[in-house]
Length: 389
Image (cartoon, rainbow, N blue to C red; front, side):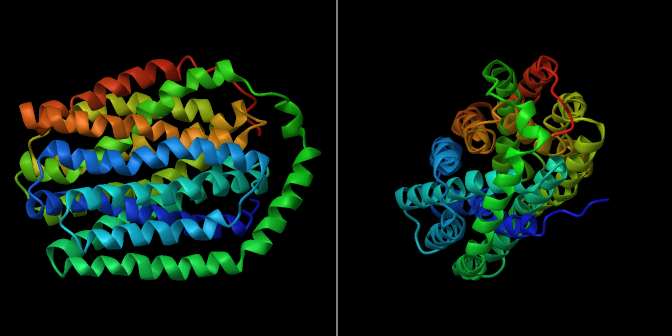
């Protein structure tokens, strides 16, 4: 089997650096609720702030990545994300935490479109596997971030969050050192892509097809955002476990996500992007229904497996399909699939938080399987594409 371009793994490392700061935030929500005396709605607002700026600006950055590449966004993003999270360790002011959450999201917005665009250009015919490898870094960040943040908040010292910025600075330096070679690789790949059959098979943007894919993007993003936000709280309030165990459950979910995302990319290249996406949503509906109604700790732990399958297996397929339908605007497509889609999840967080304040976490999270059902319906409306990209 043909090996992936080694630069993809460097992008994956950068993906880790921006996403582990975002993964840390949900694990810190019980800490913020306790120390800052927040309610669930305000806790949801912290996540909304993180996702809002990230999601709304990613399509903009993606649009300009298609027009004028900005490779320096790649090393700048980890610095901003790490610094924003570090500041949260030295304040109990809700407004400051809210702003830091926004800037952490900005770092993510700077990174994803430019990096995903370059991965697409250098992936050749292994786009599913390449996007899977790229996404592994992000999911590894979401897995490790909660563990480290939970350790700092509940076992060690909250000021230990400074370690996020220290490591991100090191990774940013490595990315900066390689930025010239990355830009050169991208330019070469673009020249090769112009002569490839794939460019000829996507002569224009297919907006109607992308419109049908959009509800699928939103459904998966809502499932991702709400589980990311409320799993630690669910562990405490419904399963009567500890905050540390809630953080660990989130890490388990994203550790599974590391393998599921890569596997999803490989399966998509082998069996087809649309087929893999549809199977994932067929699993998502019963998985979310069972998970949100589980009252047993052992059962909830086991249910993380099908939940992770349904959330992470289709990720590469959805991104590649979006990039395919908007073949002349790959950066914009990346910004929408990776950024704007999660706006819906971010907007749902304070709403679900309000519902949790009124009726409890369990009833409020029933929205997960309802949204999954909507995503399943649209997954079967998405038109076929040439699977060999």
